[in-house]
Length: 339
Ligand code: DTR
Image (cartoon, rainbow, N blue to C red; front, top):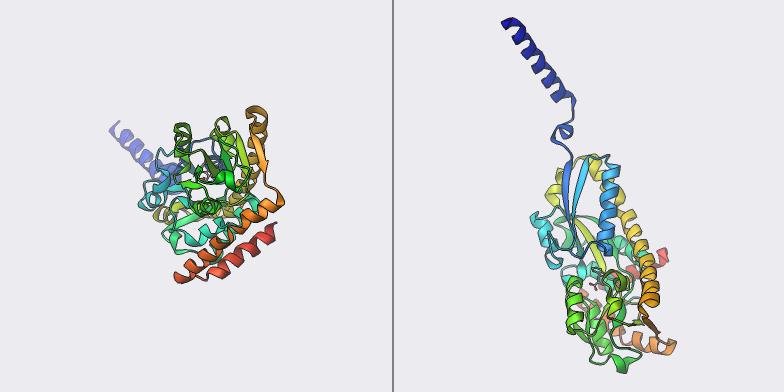
């Protein structure tokens, strides 16, 4: 009886050791869990692209990786995103470069008024720019993808039909767009996007300057009944991963993520461009929003006012030791390739 019991125990031990040796460590430890932080609410485009990336990674790794997403600033807020990922508060984070001006000077050059036509072209151009210059601002993280918004336009409670109308009007914008609004004579008020609905409601600002999908996603069309088409600039975004976390990932998982870099950029650009169309169709039909187009002559005048911004950026870049002219020329050349 005693011997029988012992035999069984030894048998069980052998089976346990066998399973331990034969099964990969990951199968015993369970899937690799990664947290992904985002700052705006779930229905907005940075979060839509996040969910698409999560789904693709989970599918392509066959469930080896599970991604927990945190939209709406629940894990990290807009301005804390980069440092939060570096510190490991989140494994992955999505950031809008304009919210930390100066920190990402090279990639932020995409937000100069260079006439980039849409989010798809601008997103692919931004990725090329990042790959070519490998800017120091991203040295402490692994960059998983980059993309941009569609070009910005003015959404306002009052009609802005000319440069007289915009004079002194408080409009919300961030990053490089501030200089653009200033050049046109508006009174720029800076804040990240999630703070804008309250500012509009309270009347702190009379409108905002951004890509038009927010008319629907933030329901700004309910307050802003006018859109003035300026079609510049785009805003750059990056999705970054904590470097230690990246280094800890198995090779096959890294490959899945690397294979997604450009595809995610293109997917997001296309989603953004299509979503702007949807949002504006809804704004016009359901919210009776008036779209104001500038005449050719007006457009030339408005654009002329922006020329010093590029010259100033080049000067500043050179002073910082950057090949600033080459960066601007590269943006134009990359964009041409994708147009
Ligand atoms: N245009 C930038 C970035 C931006 C555009 N759409 C969204 C939606 C949600 C968050 C940020 C953005 C801006 O004005 O902040």
